[in-house]
Structures are given as structure tokens and as C-alpha cells.
Length: 110
Length: 119
Image (tube, rainbow over all chains, first blue to last red; front, side, top):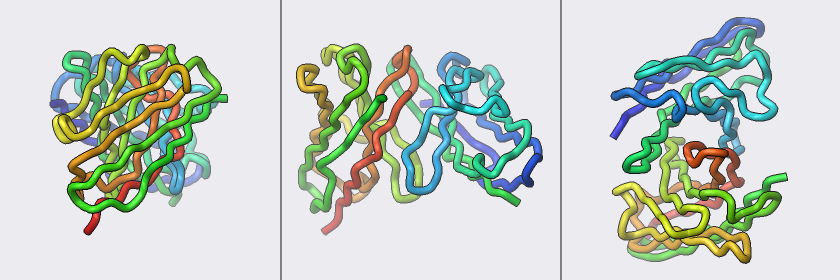
């Protein structure tokens, strides 16, 4: 089973700052099957980026995703207050069909 | 608008059973794979079960295999999770989720229903 390790676990950023968080897989993951979710306190997770780099509906263009193989990242070009949240990476393995999540990166405002 | 509304959570003793339901609306339910995902008190997300669009195929992680059963009623737009032999480590918020254009991500999530397993 593939293990996803997210780093850092907690980070803080100033408004306007560029933010990057990473997701490292224990084995190679298809870029089609690596996704990111945003979760704010008291709310359910929301699909944020799917298949490495595709923004879900309504996600601001300041967000981007990239990566391949075992290394993936989520970047915010200019931090805004509404971006404070926990971000989880997620991968799908086709055979057998198994889903795993990273432990999350909590992004706070500095 | 896609809506997923879970119900059926509550407090149950170890070894007990519980059945969760998810009412879906705003999309053609029978066109999509559906899932249950849980979030532990430590905020860890765990996939719990998958069911294919027609209901013929189901998949589970080893942690719940043999104890949990996912099912669906496409005529009623409802998803279910029958949980038995519950353990304290099953305590979590349980979310119903809909698949995306590929059955490889969770495009929409419900608001969750809390299951607490405790004596």
C-alpha cells in the first residue's frame, strides 16, 4: 500500500506570500490519480485539485498543482486569508482499487 | 446543485451494529460510483468503501472488510453503509462522497454523520 507523506505538517504564511506544500509517495503514483482536498474547521473536505494540476470548479487561479512519480506539490502564488485551511493529498491505485490520503498540511496566516 | 445528506450516526457499544444512509440529489445518481470516507478524531482521512454505479462491484480496505457492507438503491437515490462488529477505532465522522468523471477522486462530499463506538 502506498503511503503519502505531506510536509510540512503545519505552516504559516503572510498575506501575499507564495506558499508551497509537498506530498511524497512511497512508490510511484500516476499523475492522473493524485489529488488535493481543502478542509476548513467544521466543514467537510472539498475537492481542490484533481489529476495533479486540474483546478476543481470555483478554485481560484492562484492555486496550482504539479508533480510526477513520487513527488507532488500544491502552490499558492499569493496567500489570501481565505486560503487558511488544511490541505490533504490523495491517491488512487487502480488494481486493487484502493484510496489513500496524506496526513494533511495545516496552513495558517502569519 | 449536488447534495449528499448523511444520517444514522450515533453512539454504539463495541461489537454493536449501525446503518448509515446518504440521500443524494442534484445529479443522476445511477451514473456515478459512490464512496464512504471517514475522518478520525485525529483528523486522519480514511477510505471506507466503494460501490460501482450499478451496484455490482464493491471494494473495502482490510480494516473494515468483512464487517462493513456498502449498498445503494438507484431507484431511491440512496447510499447505505451497514456496519457491524464495531470497534473503538471505528469512531469517526463518516462522509458519503460522489465520484468524479473518473472513479478516482471524491468530487463531492456530504456534511458527515458522527459515529462513536464506546462502552
